[in-house]
Image (cartoon, rainbow, N blue to C red):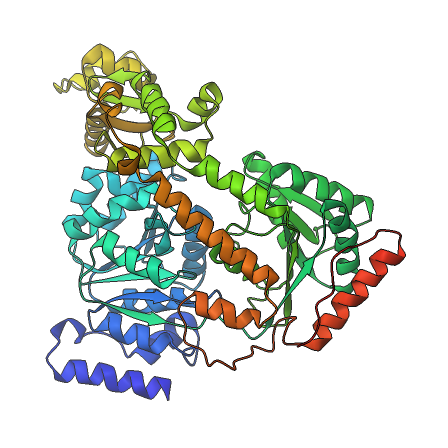
Length: 601
């Protein structure tokens, strides 16, 4: 029926004289030909219909819905270019690799993982019309040069994945998404598609407002996933969690993730489980990249050489496409239901029954309160940050900033530096531009008498320190990159470098900032919103009514007053029996648990 409905939609569009669709293949044939599927999943047809007809939409779809098909298929069918924005380098690469394995070569990738040569090769493929689906990281849109490159192409579809990242009231704000509003206006695509997995009605509206997408229709799929079983185990403190964890794991099979609130906790829990004979490792953001990759690969390895459990902070999981994760255990409450449901939802993507278990004690709130305070911009912290930016290496009004180096000298967390820069940008004190390399390796291909000052200055150099070179030759850093790129395109040289520095154009200094009020900064409103989200998370943990009902209502779904999900421990007496049994086992081991077992209603 879905195929027939889509057939009628396309035929109606053709009958209305939509010339852009005249040469399109049948969508059902395209689905079979490109992806080998015979039918669409429920809900995908409606999304594809709207995008093929040129409508703007915001789609809120749960994990495992199959949203990538919703933009990949129209992107391959529509006449122009489809641009897909994602903050996740690993996910972009996985999708590109998967499409290429299917024989779809008209796909490209532009992000910070590419060398300069690879980046230029992708731009050439784009210019030559070899790319239909272009995956781009959001920071690229801070570059006017890149925007100008896109503007010469007909962009049929502009896709923003993880769109909640544009909202400072969402659970995963990323400042690079702020550049997308201007990008959409500059590129003027045929339609815009905004996708998110977990966003409240307020955040969904903020997404549309922030990106200024007009006539944006909304399609919402229920967050409920019938194969996920949710339960909460309330205990008085950390020691009891260790005992409860081993008892829980005795009841579980397959591979799983244990999410903990701090890096130290991930290491301690992993050490504890290893002492109990489990194949386990820990993962957090400060482990080296090679170590993180090793842990991820070991988790994907289903042989005896692999690991069965990853103990991780929320740095693990985004873009991790392992369908057969059988359980997700949260050692602490998350900061919001959005965070919790997204992380728990990494279980059971293959549709098989899986467990989502939350350990909760009242002391967990203190950790999340600390995170809120630490992440909240205020006048004092922003003033300190602005002074650090002022003191950074400079070329004219430009400052070059390495967030990790600034973190080491200032003791300001790198993520807080990035959020603070976005606040200063919104307040009009600076503009963050596209990242540039701190050093560049140059290979002169041809000894030419061309009059470019950059080329003439490079004849005796193989490595260029960007700051020193720009200061010596009175060049703006972004202009240096432009001239190097032009010379490379003209065949005079090749260059490479890792874009590891933020380029910031400074408009106003710290003296003017001293006159800014706390109200204008908006920190109090931010704290109020985050505390509300935390309150809802705790309410979920402590509720004695259906957890599924509460989650669906939180995300804006309408449910009947007598609705029961029959998937949570409150609705399902067998879950309660398991919980009570675990409590008894812990007590029998000599560890007194003060938590009161849930009572069936």
